[in-house]
Image 1 (cartoon, helix red, strand yellow):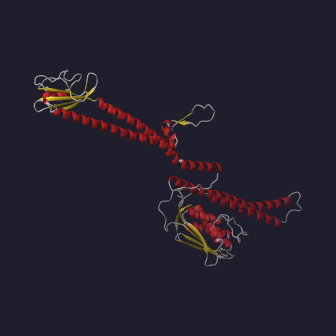
Image 2 (tube, rainbow, N blue to C red):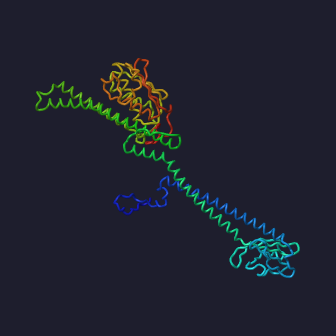
Image 3 (cartoon, rainbow, N blue to C red):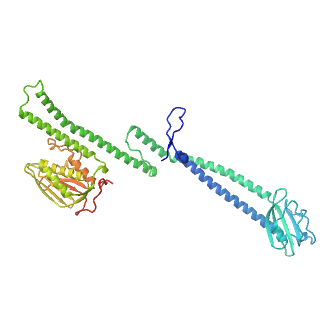
Length: 490
């Protein structure tokens, strides 16, 4: 782990973030994107110009060298043999062009300094003179450090014709060519840098606008979607950001609605509880008459106990709805038939006088035992609440489909789309106990287990609630480890 090196305090007293070791090796990451694009563009154009200039320079140099060599060899091969003296080397002759020298050597006579003044011939020329080679072309230097191109050709008569021409004119052409290429190359690199900067600034303008909008949203928490123009990558990024804003806005609205609805639902039992406690306090206090009659006191205490139970149930439902982290749930293979038996036994103790007709087949689900039991219990409680006294609740479990039918008044068509919403209560249920969260918990558990729950009319005239959960009709293999992710929450 790299350590932090505290930087020296700035002169204005402002705090400076710590410098992490190795940041100097990543200096380019601290540069702006526009400067990086400009730098990369300039470097790319500079390398391209350098390679093109080098290739052009080498090509021109080779072409000039080849033309000069062909000219010297042709002159040496076609020069008049009358220049040759059979006894001595011919004195140097001016060969028509400026600084072009010619010498003719017969036999093994050496070429003297008078023949080719200031030029030091090399081994290739002496091999041609001795007859070892037919011709040679070579670059030699003179005593004044000038470069000469020397061509030696052995003629059929045995004489060797030597022609030397300085490379000054060729070098002047190459120097001018190099200067021109350097000038235009630098101009091209500068123009490429300016063009890269302009392209980077114009191309990143949508990114700057998007950044400004995001910063504005972070400051003001205004989740208004951003305008999207075009269909390029920036537009796709803005569209994805708008989708995130929409989801965030919906989540915030649900949070606010949950808080508002929870406050409204909690206010009613708390107000009633406070009123009853005030009555008990006033009746038993110093200012009370003779206390409440035992029957009235018992009724008030029973009412207080019922309100406390309702408040406890409501808080438990809110906590269950707030459990949205799948890693906190215990996940294992569960037999839904066993969960149904436990839920029916629990509801039977509360709903006295209601008959439960239960038929279930084994169905194994990978999920949360507590959540599944809570959801099935809520379905049975809802059916028992709406069933008439001495009524029958029909429960069937087959192939992962749990059907709960009651003999109540049924669900009005206008209420069907909302029965699973949080705190939703129909007009008929407002006078009955409950918080409107039971069926919401059922839907949350179903979605968490990749299942569904729907409400419809029962053939018996009441309501039918159908819960489907994916699973298997036989026991699974190894048990799913505790703490694994819940199905349907990838």
